[in-house]
Every structure is written in C-alpha cells, then in structure tokens.
Image 1 (cartoon, rainbow, N blue to C red):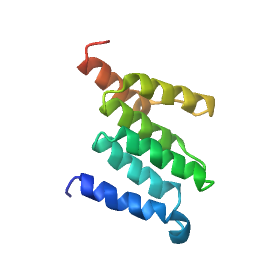
Image 2: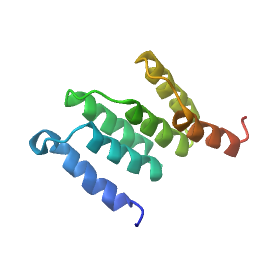
Image 3: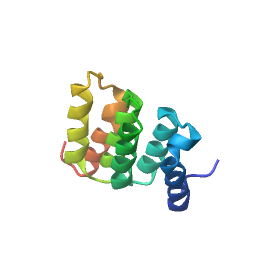
Length: 112
C-alpha cells in the first residue's frame, strides 16, 4: 500500500466538504485526520476537527489521538498538549496511542 500524499489529502478534504451529502461519519473524518498526522499537516487536522463538530458528529478518542499525533509530528508539542487537555476534559482516558507521538517528538527535540 502506498502512503498518503498532499494531493490525496486535498482530494479527501474536498469529499469532507460534502460530508452531509455523502453521509460521512466520524470514522471517515478520523481516516482523514490519520492522513494529516502522516503528512504532518496539523493545520489541516484542526480544520477537519472543526468540520466534525460542524456536522454535529461526536469526536472519539481516536479523533483526539489523531489530532494530537498530527500536532506532535508537525513539531508543535505545546499544541499537542493543549489537545491532550481538551481530550481529558471530554473524559477520554489517554493511552499509549495518545502519548507515543508526544514522547517521540519530545525525545526528538531532546526536551524529555
């Protein structure tokens, strides 16, 4: 399987813009968030998260983990921690999937 590209991400975002017409669910959005994380597209991830809320869908722990991962992989640890706080406020319990990208980035920048 090939990796997602910027072009794939742009095409996916076009589909998300039609999410109500297409009947997309939170899982569809989570897939796009995962692509954002793989491509270090933290700004795109936030936009997708806002789209989830705009469609009156409930973000899941997977949703928050994907945004945290995209922020971490983009090197924005402060934003990733802020999203971790938001996740906890929504009563989700952080797990290894939540902390791995944060710890990886902190190790990379030697802030751990």
